[in-house]
Amino acid sequence: MLIGKVVGSVVASQKDEKLENLKLLVVQVHDHNNEPQPSYVVAADSVQAGTGDLVLFATGSSARQTTLTENRPCDAVVMAVVDSWDLGGENVYEKWA
Amino acid sequence: MYLARVIGRVVATARYPGLDGVPLQWIQPLDEEGRDAGAALVAAAVVGTGPGDVVHFVDGREGALACPETFVPVDAAIIGYVEEAAVFDRDLAAERRRNA
Amino acid sequence: MFLADVVGTVVSPVQIPLLEGRTLLLLRRVAPDGTPTGSTRIGIDLTGAGVGDRVLVVDEGNAGRQLLEAPDGAVKTVVVGVVDYVDREGELLYDKAARAPVARMGS
Image (cartoon, rainbow over all chains, first blue to last red; front, side):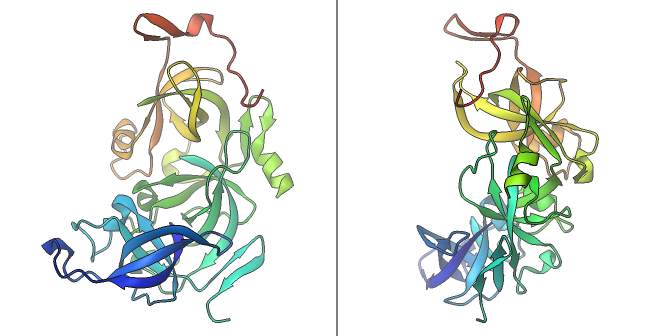
């Protein structure tokens, strides 16, 4: 999985019917030091994430392993909202700080 | 399947239901010389590992198959703690732990 | 499938049950002429290969599960053969019997 920040959402009224009722988030990848990377992913949301949240997302066939995305043309899914992380004992990110 | 070192821990309370209780850890993939290889990623830790440990992990849907609940959106899982990674006459795991 | 040089071994006393008792090899993926390509991998050995051997590797879950007879196994990379010869358009690129020791990266 990678971590990214939810920076927006995507609405597409003209789409494959298998994509209906999926909430699609625009996620900007952040590295382990919480530095934003020049890389974006559109991911389905399985955990009620909101704009500004740092989230974990899974890609590839793993992204279809939720009740929401099973058998749908989806290759990225947000599967957790990140509260905090540490590297070598040093706190890098704290949601509630 | 790849060699990596655990570099951190992630706390995430709101997560896909089947993933309750599975530790999530930052890992840095390593090459055969024990050097960092590519970008760090987050993996489900299904064996008891922690920061500083050298581990091996599997990516793709196989990551989910290593989890207690296998129908989960996981694309990387730590599947073993590496005690020794011998490359020719060197033990990378021991060197990596010393330098951690 | 791809070719790789076995450059080391991995000892893992704590791991998922499926891997218990299996030999794990550290693999350097190579082009047919032996040039290193791609990242270092760990493979489950089914052939008795050793350090210095050039081997044939599958790195795909369905194939791995079939080989280990583990329908739900978290496996991907499996060493399925020890290579004797590789040729390209009749030119012998690798001959196990005459091989030089596998070079260490950066040396």
